Image (cartoon, rainbow, N blue to C red; front, side):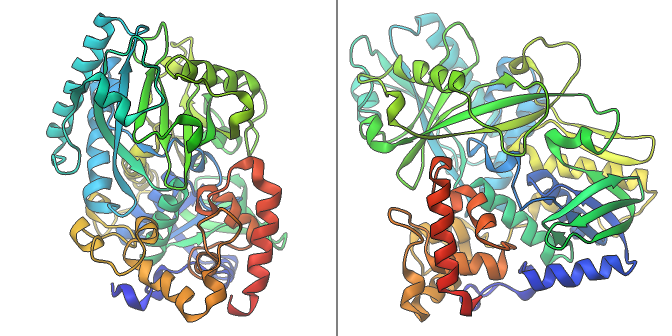
Length: 521
C-alpha cells in the first residue's frame, strides 16, 4: 500500500458502504458465513473467513470493540500465568499469538512493555525465587514460540538503585531490588479491533455496526438496523456467535461464569515519574499480580480484579468501590506515598466470558482456554480465551463453522501471516514520515491522517484541551473506520484519550469537533 495515498477504498468502512451492504442483504443475498459480534474474536472470524475466499457478513448491535475488547489491560500476554497453573498448552498458544502480533500482523500496534516486580519486605525470598524462575520459564516459552530476542529482551535481576530509577515512587525501606521482564502491549485495543475489521472489509467482508441480532438459527439471523429500526433477515450457510459474555442470550445451552476485571485510571504524576510497568504480587496468592501500566497519553492503568458477576449483564459494566479499594490497597503496599481515592481520575471494568466447567470455585481459577461449541441448530459459539489469542479463537470458530455448514473454503487459514491494515516491518515503520504518536496508531496510514491536518489548519486542532487526538483523526474515523457519530468515536475510549468520568465533557467536545468539520465528512 502506498502510505501517502491513503487507504485502499476496499479497506474503508463508511456510512455509505454500510447502507449499501445492508440493502444487499435485505434483498436476499446469502453469505457463506455470518458472524455476530464485532469484538476482537468476531472481527477476527470475519477476517479469517473472508481471507479464505468465503463471503462474509459480520454484525454488532453497537460499534466495533464496544464490549469486552475495549476494556482490556491493553496487554498482549505471553502466558506466564498459565505456566504457573500448569496450563502449558494455553501458555504456549499465548506466546505464539503474542509473537504473531508483534512481528507479523500488527507490529505498528503491539510493542514490548517492560515490567518490574519490586522485591519488598512483603515478598519472601522463596516467593522471589519462584517469580524469577517463572520469568526464566517465560523466556524459554518465548524462544519455543519463535519470537526474536530483538522483539522481547531477556528478563534480569535489578539492584535496588536500578529498581528505584525505573519506579521512583516505590518505598525505599526494605526494597531489595526488582525483577525485570518484558511482555507485549497494544497501543489501543479498540484500534486493534478496528484494524482487524477493516482488513476483513478489504477482503470483501460486510462489516455492519449498529445492527442488532434479535434471534439466530444455524442458517439465518433476524437483525435490526439500530439507526432506522428496520428489521431484515440475513441468510447464511453457517452462523458464528462471537458475542462473548452475552453469547447465552442468543444461543441456548451456553454456561458461562462472567468475571469482572476492573482498572483504575491515574495520572502519571500520582506515581512519581514511573518509567516502566509494575507487577505487584497480591498477598496470599502465588500467581496473581496487580498490574501498573503506563500509557502514552500520560495516564496510568492499575488493574485488575477478577470478581464473579451475577444477574443481568450490562452493556457497559461499572467499577464498584470495593474493586477500587482493593486495587488502591495493593498499590499502596509498595509505594512511598500511597495513592488516595481522590487521586483516581477514573475507573473502568470489563467482563470476561469464562466457560463454566463446574469445577472451579473462584473465577480467577477458571481456565482461560477458549471453547468452540455447535448447537443443535448448527450455530457455532466461541467463548473464553483472551485478547491475545483472538486470532486462534477465530480460526477454530471458522473451522467449526465450515464443518457445521458442510462448506469447503477455497483456501486454508491465512491469518497468522496476514498483516493488518497499516502494518509493516519495524524498519519500515521507523521511516514513515509522520509524528510518532500517529505511526503507533495508524502505521503506514499515518501520513494520510497527517495530510488531512496539513490541508486545513483547523483539522490539526485537538478535540479537547489536554487530549492529543486531533479533529483530523475524527474525520479519518468517520470516513474510513466505521464511526457513525461522536458516540462511536468516544466509545472507542482510548482513541480519544479520555476516561469514563469525562464522558459528558468528551461527548460535547467530540460533537463540537464533528460539527466544525461537517462539510468535510
